[in-house]
Length: 277
Length: 199
Image 1 (cartoon, rainbow over the protein chains, first blue to last red):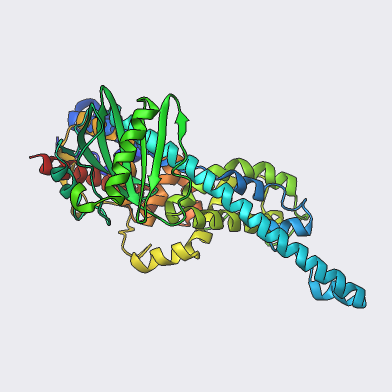
Image 2: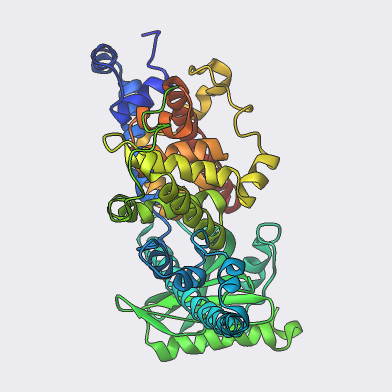
């Protein structure tokens, strides 16, 4: 069979976008062509997988709050929410009230500015909290995916002198691995992965029969709250941040034992670097 | 291309509740696309907020029987293109010109070796790794990324995507095919590099 289905036709077939004539022709071809049938199956699988992988980011609650009922809010609320289109000209309103108006305007400015900073601080706190939730979700997903994945780790070694150098040139930062680990804890290897579009080192440890993922990434400056321990679906998430690095660990092991490992890794970053390299 | 929602006559004033009823359910989708394109939360929020603002302003010109989702996604896309991250992306990659817009693939764009190298079973195994697929999607240029997100994630028909992006349907078809090929190539490259190290 010389004329195989083109990539565009196979793709449109997966999307259900072929015309009836094209579809009939494609079906006739697929009935007799195993390679094209295999490619058509691949296109469908890829479409399904992309649909799932593409649903990645959720809007923070405060964004929804800001966008709901913008037209029904008062002008001051709009100012706080950042929607500035419906503002009334302050000069026009001041002209009506003379000196009393100036005083009222000054008071209004003070109140507005105060409200702005209060609101901004609250929004920052909300954003930090939302980012923390998103981060926990992402590391949890990646840890579970690693546990479920039949593919071996990208670097398999219990030797920190093998694991750490493997990341050279792959991530824009460096880190230390602890020389001594808590009892019954071993380094299994590592993966290069991504969190919020940033390359991160995913270190895999075993504590007894429990697997632990420790994600190390460059500190972004806005990342707050990574130290907050969190539980999710029976897994424990905890972390730390140093001057340059942020770490987040996830496992279903006993939280106290997870804390020991996190503490050892933290000490490796902040302690005697020569000893822990 | 005539866009069905483009009206020059304003019929009624802004209908905020009707707008909210149509727009707010689309917020997660709009934010997701905005984040994929702009690569950070703050820019995504700005783009979505500006999109809502523009859509609310122009809502009285929106024809009720036309496709609201396509309309607001087109506003989002245009807002992104003029945003800081959109302009930065355009400086580093030609959004329109670098693509072969003929709607057909020539042999040069489809390396057969890339297609036949692996079986669907091994690809399926690789696709089970969501992080790997997301990393592969991140390698797509904005025109390919947006078309694959609209098609696969938003489940838009080619006709709707053509309206959102203001391009012919044939170009939509070729871009989607090209995007999937690029994702596959990136997945193969990932597998290749990890195999290389283990060897």
